Length: 178
Image (cartoon, rainbow, N blue to C red; front, side):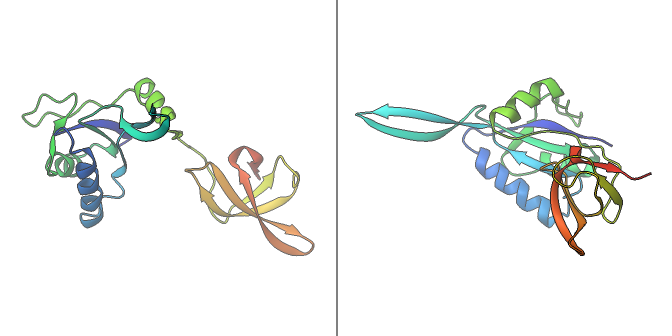
């Protein structure tokens, strides 16, 4: 099953409470491998009143929460039965499954919030031998120490002055050794 973004309807003004409830339920019900991110789309609003600049976060879609999850019976049921949730957008109720947001609709929302939504399909793993392809250590062989898919970075141990030294690189700066 693939993960997709879904829009959850809430009572007006209950977005933060629903997000908190969902995050607590993810922990208590061990759903971390099926429900990944819970967001309330907000943007910074700047107002000037009587010469005083005030910044405030404004909800872009009041009454809605975005959830990135794998739509399976248990994850769908858990979200649907969270206090404050009235349903999924794109679901007619009566147990019908919600329709995920198309990629072209979620990308601008995430971008506006400063979040990169990149699906990373790489065939590397911790402990694998790689070659540094770019940067100051280009041409150096190394071993992958850790992988950060959220920031698209990898830590590679390269030999420097006779010692293994960790080097932080972008995914595009390494290549697999055949």
